[in-house]
Length: 403
Image 1 (cartoon, rainbow, N blue to C red):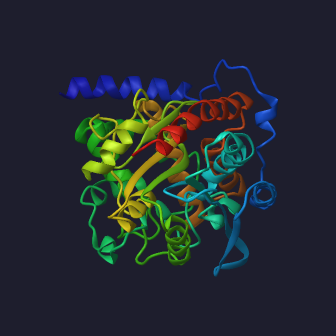
Image 2: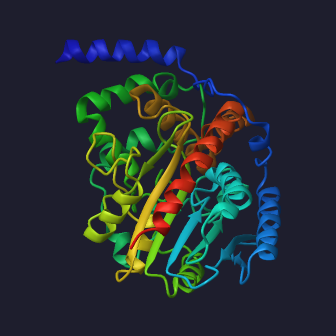
């Protein structure tokens, strides 16, 4: 066992020394698709509202909503509801930015859908609700979390018992995840981070380690994947918006847009495990022929307080099809990609909560974090748009055809 462990550690260290972000991919860059991207929350919001206004002129009954954020009066969650034009029996929800920094790509994708895909959709009996940047603080400040270090995608539920959940595996590896001092990017802990991470993988197994880290935790406010002690303020107005928009609909399809996990430049589909038979049946019909991680592979991890799970719980009498569309950035489905992603995540959290030993340490952590969730490569930005434009119309059409 010891000889095997040392061999794995040696390979890991060698790979880590050469590790870097994967290239964007050998794809033709579509400059028209690149034009959807913007670099600030303010510009993304202005462009979203422009697309919403265009839809309001094109379709009857369109409603544009702004939910102000109490923590910062300049920030809003914006929404555009395009109702079914002849009587609504189904609702599609396309949401972005529950992890703030992931909203840069999510906003671009939403606006592409609004301009290019909505005109081709059958809106006779199916409405579409776009919810733009659920965590505007995180997006504006290039963080995944809000001003209280809360991961919003670990914070949504219909029952406050969520916050009493114990993640038994998290404290075991807390020393790996939560350094409680100023960040030095060249500290021994980070120079040899891949070695330490591989040690934990060998000891506990990749599946156990991934679940312990990513599931969510409610005990350590300055730790990664912290779900908070109470529901975030935007939960109530978002619930009112969704409930109003879904009134009269027998079916709801929520597609929540994310970046980060998975093969770089590839769109991955996965829900938390779907246990309600009618919802699972509908999801498998709509996604037939597409690769979906239904929870039966070693790469899967379950999260608590998930935004899409919450929507399913809001409507027990409806058929609710919920899915996460995750655009991979770091090949984190591989061992070394996962380790590199985790290192960047921990460094950013440490810098945000404790500062850097130098401005250079702080800036490096922020820059690496932004690149991980909003890659600058034109190839990456173009290919995720191309995949979305090819696949979402099929999925939306199938949803509209459900009986």
